[in-house]
Length: 409
Ligand code: AMP
Ligand code: MG
Image (spheres, rainbow, N blue to C red):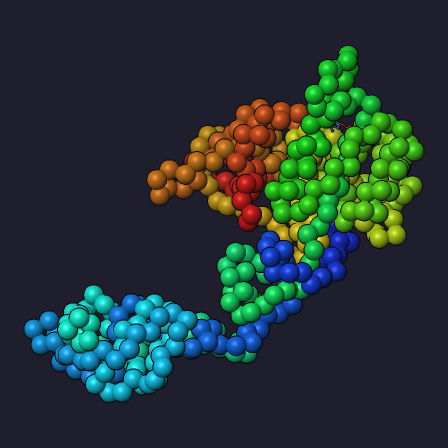
């Protein structure tokens, strides 16, 4: 058995980010930047008001208060998108609306709530003294032309899209979203919706793995369910390697398995067959196949194992393929809400757990149910995987680290 770290290092060394492509901004959400972004212009581009009110010369409001208002003639009205026709002179005010450009000569805005409209709007009574710059968003307040905005490796979030649109970007250089093929093989497997003949089981791994691929931000590609036939399996894997950026198979990687998947993969690719010191998901294979050196992940067949193997080994590697540099989930600390017993066996155990957060308290971690590698219902219920290092386990109240599965972290 080898430690998980070693298996992961082996995989990560052999998986490279996909070559960047320029895509329209509208297609870049969730992708990873492959270029540094610099602001080409000031944001905002011009000084404007953060409030509805009156643009003034701040010095003109000296001493203004509710009992001692300062009266100013209103010489214009400035709406967003409509700059003033002339500068503001000392002793004048202009009505101004949020987002409208400040008129030349004005250096502050009195919010409308601190004013009184007089003479049908021809005059304003200012009821408060304002400082120069009040409620003014100056040009370049958020970004100055030439500022470094985003770095390669950052994920394009909704906020990033807003900023990119705000600086006039129309396209952006990103790593494409990896297309990840998922293949099931086995004569015992039946596609969903068909009756079971004796000895058959339903193919549950494919739909679960496709959904994990999608939830992780990659594009799932269903490579189907193929019979245990060397030519058919070879065809499906070759096709996956030619059309996808990575391929996941499940089953046929156990010690002593005389499985056709293994025979075929060894023929098609440069594979390494591993026994990893974890439970579940001990058996695992990884290699590269075909002219495009497509990474192929041989996940174990047991339903829980295939999902855990995806989380611990495939997901980090696929994130690297997507251009991400934050590959591993953060281990979130919590408190064992019950004892987690185990025996020493040289492996780290990943226990399916439900996680609750009491009001303001720590995360409380409890078993999600039966922990066999075929017990898929506990996996379905699980919020996370609790990490139990080799040993006798944990007592109730001990600190426990959890990989939160539904989060992006
Ligand atoms: P293997 O790794 O091929 O020895 O398979 C281990 C277990 O996983 C066996 O009980 C298989 O029947 C089961 N299995 C393999 N592939 C699938 C699948 N696609 N869906 C559900 N169970 C599977
Ligand atoms: Mg098998």
